[in-house]
Image (cartoon, one colour):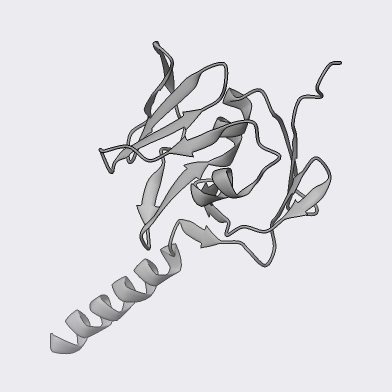
Length: 147
């Protein structure tokens, strides 16, 4: 009887370990290119969504929007000259000015960093995002400035 329980326990443990973690650190494989230039950032894939730490936004001068630190640690405020986007850690609900919008995969906190869904944020601010599954590269294009 004890051996059957032990075998069932071991089989269950092996099965659980095969499920793995749905969060993947992909820094070695995945690259982000902004207007053709490779950027340096930590990258995480969660449920087929590419996430970058919030610091990526303010550290990149080519982006036309920025992160504002608010009083609520769960609130993420991203602002451009045209509008403000509000995201909440762990929530699929977001706002663009007064318009309610949805995030497919919500932002989260890990290792004292706030992680945001790259495609959602980039496209919300009018950037074009392309994913190349062969090279595992994300290409982001900012709108060209009209003269």
